[in-house]
Length: 107
Image 1 (spheres, one colour):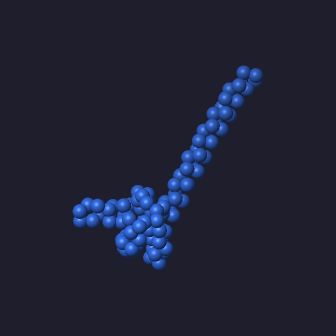
Image 2: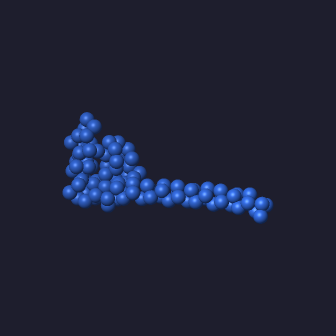
Image 3: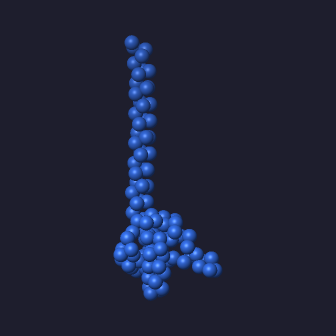
């Protein structure tokens, strides 16, 4: 019995470490899903575009063109990336829509 106690403790510690890793992976996956649901393609309704574009374009010196193209992109993609600049990878449609010259269409 005394020889089985260290083996039992080792199994218990191993099991607790594995279960903590699984719990952490689940928490990370849930965080990713909630982030996707908030900013991904189709996460907005058409009426939400002006407000989100105002936020997105609030710090640019080219406010009118930014608002024009942001709202055009938002109506098509139904999403606006988080922040004032960048983060376009969150919204694939917004990121992949290009001009005739190959530049980004959406601000």
